[in-house]
Length: 216
Image (cartoon, rainbow, N blue to C red):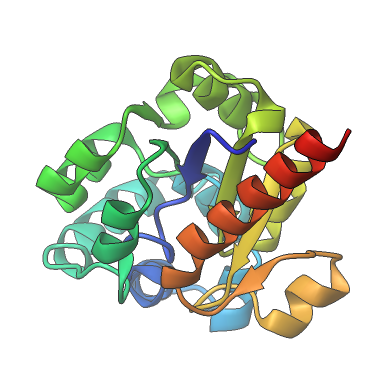
């Protein structure tokens, strides 16, 4: 039975993927270095900005400062992904967030929408980050359910890899992250284009499991 749901944030709850692209690209412009393309940044989605800054700009001490300045502007008025709030209301199970976004930014950007969640895991909570399973396993612990009773939804290939490493069922959400083709090629078996499908999938799986249990 699925008894809890874990959500990624960027590109799943918050419509922030384009803002993330802008953050790194504007940082590169101000540093006077090569500007990374959208697809180059897209491959980095799902891990903390501190890691991505090192990948893109090395140990440049100015990168973090510039990125944070740009981030304040691009993330000042983010909207939720279409149907995100409705989906959160529909899912009556316990819910958690596992995100590469730092806690202060998460609180500032999601505000009262954090009230939908029973547990939160940010990079400050773990030693290792996605695709290591530590963040997801910590979320399961805080929710009070084993991985086999939890489902995780994300929009990046790194999210899919993390769920596999943690032994958690995964629902791939296609919006501004990985494409349906990329998820299919990576072996995702459940792919949705609308968050409104998430609750339907949960109900269908639980109903099927109940039927199987009764016939044993």
